[in-house]
Length: 299
Ligand SMILES: Cc1cc2nc3c(=O)[nH]c(=O)nc-3n(C[C@H](O)[C@H](O)[C@H](O)COP(=O)(O)OP(=O)(O)OC[C@H]3O[C@@H](n4cnc5c(N)ncnc54)[C@H](O)[C@@H]3O)c2cc1C
Image (spheres, rainbow, N blue to C red):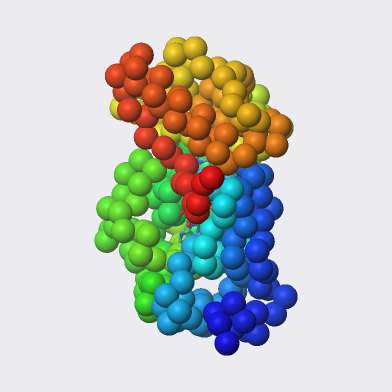
């Protein structure tokens, strides 16, 4: 029996073969994952990790695929989705959420419960696991501001709880996080008037609709913010707004986004990223650093 058959036997309908990653990423493009599964418990994760180790197969973790570009030749090995782990629990002024819960749902629940500290993360279309992995943030708030701890399983299948104090983190960066699978995370929030929180949330959701090209597939900001500047300002100032390659285009609405406006291939998007970096470097001498993550094999 090979590893694919073992996974099929174990996960049944929760195991898909040659599954197009266009179905699981917000860019809506990308080649197939050899195997795509939905582990739901620590025991199931342990099983998959052991299997990957035994058969020496690469293993990837995906939340909502809102920060990933997958090459058109696909992802070798196993892609594990966290979507089946999506509970959110409020206890006094703390929230504990499983990795596959929606960050925006947690923000909504917190606002309604009068718990402040994450309201400005409203509208980020990722999972809790993805938010912890990236230290996602917006409008001056970051995931790690209110994060207290997160439960993980390491690549050898050992469970652990990591406290924020033990982790080095920075803007869109969490040191050593690649060694872990985030299973859940706990946040300590602050009692705040819920009408005020809901007002902030609504105004942020409105700003996103106003400023971001939400009617096209994208994966949000392509590049990290360089020191003392904005990637979108540099891209705009380099005259790249609207630049297109194949079906991929620098958004006219927000120059920090690349949109898939017409059946873009992953290679269209990757080439556009390359050209943006090259042209911004030539004009401003600044190397833009990718925020988005490239997976698998590109043509
Ligand atoms: C329209 C739009 C707007 C956006 N706005 C913002 C914004 O304002 N601020 C911001 O920070 N980001 C923004 N993003 C980007 C993205 O939503 C965030 O980075 C988000 O945190 C990614 O979460 P995800 O679940 O989609 O992660 P994925 O894209 O699925 O994965 C990203 C990385 O996290 C890893 N990962 C995911 N889950 C786990 C887990 N449980 N354990 C270990 N590793 C894991 C993956 O392996 C991968 O390396 C935006 C994206 C879009 C499309």
